[in-house]
Length: 220
Image (spheres, rainbow, N blue to C red):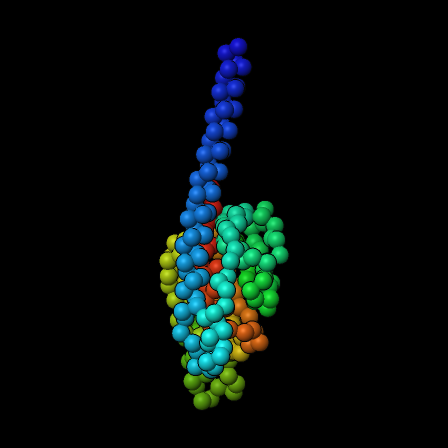
């Protein structure tokens, strides 16, 4: 009888703990979605770009806010926009190509071992590589120009996953941005972008920046 009681008590404790954890997860997801929704609201207030017409600017301001919900994957969570193909939640990476608000937008997430190279070391390496490219291109004796590794310097920020960096990958006519987060022994790389045919590009850039920064590490 004691053994049965002990097993029953253990099962109840386990179930209670699971329910409590699920409740905490739901609450934290709801809180995150609230914060993310507010950030998406601000995308309609983003200043217009130099090549944006008044009509396009008004269209972007009046467009409906991007909607979605938090989804947990293997090792991380992310805000997924409505209309995106349902990704596998047991994967440690994902690739989204198009959703209701932007059929030609894309966003991918890859989580992999950091191989002993920290986030700050990786950023320093990208900066050093761009300096090398700038030096080569500034040399009049250089037979050909090298393509930039990035436009401008990596921009640090704090997201749900802690300190991160946003890097403009220097795509030219398209938009391509990489966001990096580090949590030893892992590195998360989030890439998003679109080509120059996408309408309201500055608003879409703002929305995808919010999606990328919604990344959070799952508790181990």
